[in-house]
Image: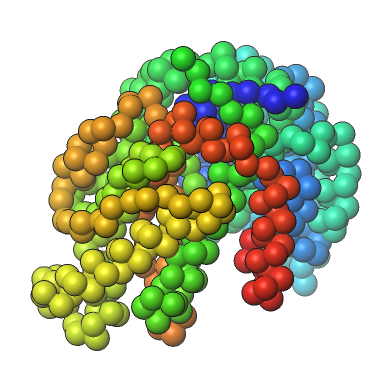
Amino acid sequence: MPILVDIRKLTIIGKLIQHGAKNVASSLSTMAGIEADVQIKSLSFVEPSDIENEMGSGEMYHASIRLTEPPYGVFVMTFDDQTAATIAEEMTGQPVEDGALNQMHQSALQEICNILTSGFIDGIANTLETTIDMETPTVEREHTSEIAESTLSHIRMDSLSIVLDTVVDLAEQDTEFQLHIFLVPDPGSFVNIIDKLDIEEIKNKDSLAEFYEGESTF
Amino acid sequence: MPILVDIRKLTIIGKLIQHGAKNVASSLSTMAGIEADVQIKSLSFVEPSDIENEMGSGEMYHASIRLTEPPYGVFVMTFDDQTAATIAEEMTGQPVEDGALNQMHQSALQEICNILTSGFIDGIANTLETTIDMETPTVEREHTSEIAESTLSHIRMDSLSIVLDTVVDLAEQDTEFQLHIFLVPDPGSFVNIIDKLDIEEIKNKDSLAEFYEGESTF
């Protein structure tokens, strides 16, 4: 059965994602004291069966959660060893030796993953004027085939996956790191949300946010 | 009136764009003897009213055409002075002095714009197993507000615009240049095309193309 959406409402998906990224930056600042610019470098749509391929090959860190409220589905964030080391060193001030994260590094990584995940989902929820209940992510290092299998096992294989290349650019250091985000909502629930949203209303929110913050990022 | 598309078919838009980019690379090779890698760095959806903003400010070169067959609408490619100079020098072997393009530079720029434009549109058309008739683009340098006004005057303001950041990386030189592409199809005609396409069929075409070319780009 087709799950229909007005094609002119696709601009809303971009807006939602931008609001998610903006909220990640704001969460990093308030919850971790990290000033950063969070940019979405690319947005694409793939089928769930292509996700493993999009994740790359080999072992990756990932923070995955299931959304227990609309738009349901899963949120998966992946990053490589280099990014994990960069984040861990940045947060703890301790160098990572031979790529091995100590207990403190691991806690810091878990903390940042919590902030990034909840910041992103809350940013989307705020725009929707709702909340989206979610679990706390478990951060693990696994082969991409295992990540795809464990996180996507509950997903309808005809779902739509939104893939984001995200760059977090730390203001004070000459450091940036890349995150790969996979958002696989339940297609019916997602379309239902988009249908209810008004493009003009979202634009007004952008204007209001810019008015209060005195800046325009988008 | 809503113009509905099955949300799970959005993956097809990405595939169409990738096939367009692949055909640009192939056209550059066969028609201009230039070996290049053509990458889509980002794809986003905006409303036509946001296009001027997306084009940036100031004067830009642009090659614009109207499509006279489905999906109709307009195709606009913009690039800055630096890119124009890079292309002109690359094609003619003559340096551009003080940013001023001579007659030979201008002809070369027009030629490359013809190849890029027809390569992209033909790549999409091939995937759709059809042809898309189009005009030859006129290359002009104008203020972005003028470009937006002249190219979008026939467009329904509730259309969907696909915005692509494209990088053309020349194999032999350590040179790359950026192009901004705006594809604003007639929404009804575009949805009609997407509706008729089968995801599995497009995948098979990818496999077939890879088989013949002995490589996998996508």
